Length: 268
Image (cartoon, rainbow, N blue to C red; front, side, top):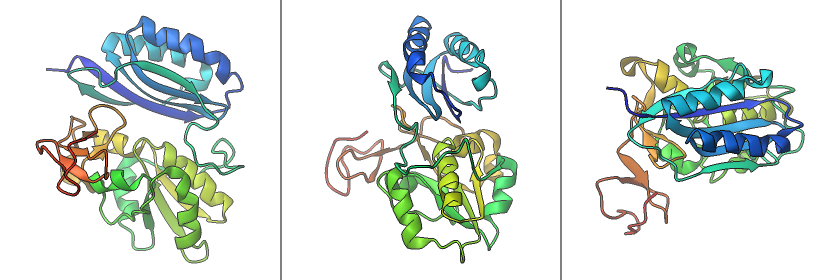
């Protein structure tokens, strides 16, 4: 039996000179349809995770995609017994994902998109460096086999990692991934700017990979952190069994009553 609520995640780098004017109509649209979650708008595009009934989400997405700029959105879907958000937020930002480096624009240059069906072959090659562009606490919950953890606390630390650990003359092929695709897409744009020539990123991110890849063929290990009240999802995109200590950021089983690392009872 299908669960009553749908969670959709999507983003797109696209020029939105009118993004400020989009805020109030988009917020009203979500409220009218009982849809909750967070939508970020910036001049460089849109980034969102929202949830609601199937009808409510369909109404919002149909209206949004009436704008030709969003007609080709890649939407990742999962299902839940309840809406994993308390309210609806539409926020205006300088960037829809904050790298904080001037001149990085995926609308102008971006790495090579790799579909989930081709991802396993790429990251299994000996001449490819595979990098998880997510935060350290996310990587600890789950990642792809043999992926490098940059051990960053925020995405805007990624440029420092590249400067300290990667060299265009030595690392000829670099493949990157993240939850929904937005961070690794911007990371490829940055790395092309830095002189790296062959950079790849997983189209649609981990969530699309888990949606399309059979578990017995998967190279994913563990669960995937998501930015809502579910905290993590498993390979079937169902609510996972792991959460995060809000004090020390170590992983905690949801059945535990305290963090084994610091003793805290404050979990995400």
